[in-house]
Length: 289
Image (tube, rainbow, N blue to C red):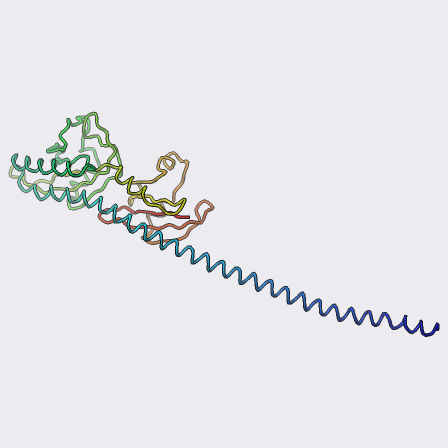
């Protein structure tokens, strides 16, 4: 009996060790397979997320492009109206006689009646004298166009259409409307001499503001307009930018060609879409999140 019990006790550790060895191999295989499966699932998940995120950004960029295409057309139509009025003036400046100037004034009066967004049309001689204004309010004698950059640039390059950023018009006494101006040179014959004059068309800034505010790029998206020098034509948070409470990547935008790109700005990923505005050196910029 003792011998049998002794043999059993001797065999038992061997059986346990053999069983443990088998279970350990199975555990390793199971753990390895589980690890490989988890890693594979993580890699597939990362790939799917990356693909989904990329497709979502492409769709958002495409949608922003389509929306901004229409907004660009609307803004270009606005600028085209200003150009058409200046072309009308230029075509009727072949004769600078008093009678012809009166006819031109009458045509401008009719134009302003049909287009309430036009604030003022003015014609200046090369030495800065006011030849014609419509409407004909009393001019501000403290305002000299000879000291204005836009006037000198227009006289120096009369073939170009020069658009000014929004500003307070100071042409008339007691009137300070917020306007966007387009200036162009006029080649005229006056008192037997060939001269270069300047035409100015002022349109109400609220038209641009309304056009831009109608554009929706998602819940937080917005558009703004800048010129080639980085001057803000329109921005929904323009006052915050000027006061230093908000930043915008304007310096980077004016160096880029039109198109869409994704960037991280102040810790947020966003899609920026740039469109060039015909007739001017302006850019419309759309920002969507």
